[in-house]
Amino acid sequence: MQVPRPAEVRVPYTPIVATLGYVLSADRERCLMVHRNARPGDNHLGKYNGLGGKLEPSEDVMAGMRREIREEAGIECLSLRLRGTISWPGFGKHGEDWLGFIFLVEGFSGEPPAHNAEGDLHWVPLDQLAGLPLWEGDRHFLPLVFDDDPRPFHGVMPYRNGQMLSWAYSR
Image 1 (cartoon, rainbow, N blue to C red):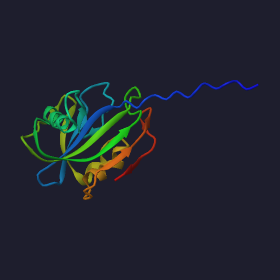
Image 2: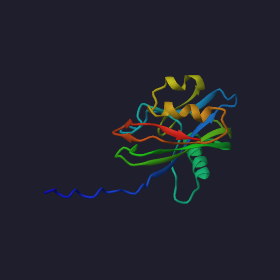
Image 3: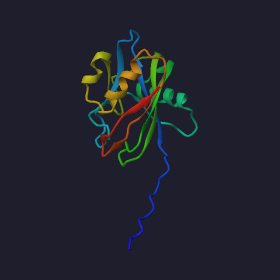
């Protein structure tokens, strides 16, 4: 006699929607990165990251990106371009799913401060990004953010227990 197996439970995909932006210097040779070193318990502690965060219920992704850049770097975006989207199933501190809209900020006004509430802000030469302590997955998609292909990329990068499991994308 076979014991019936419980039906597979499918949880609907309800990700946290966020923006992630990479601000280019005027000479297009450096990128503004935050070194997440200010808040103990930060899921990103010790890593370098672009700027961004969760979308507010009342804003579109472009408005959310502009707000996050203003809050985190004290600058106003004048020109930004959607470079892609990434689905990060299981990425959150407690296994939450995230969906990110990835932007390249190609023009801005103002001067970023030396640090914000999350850590120190640094202008990093593009050719040195890969040498920074980053999320492992960032090394896969960052080249797509800065390449010359005008087509946006759309990727999926599942995580489990803080570790990237795989990476796939299309354009």
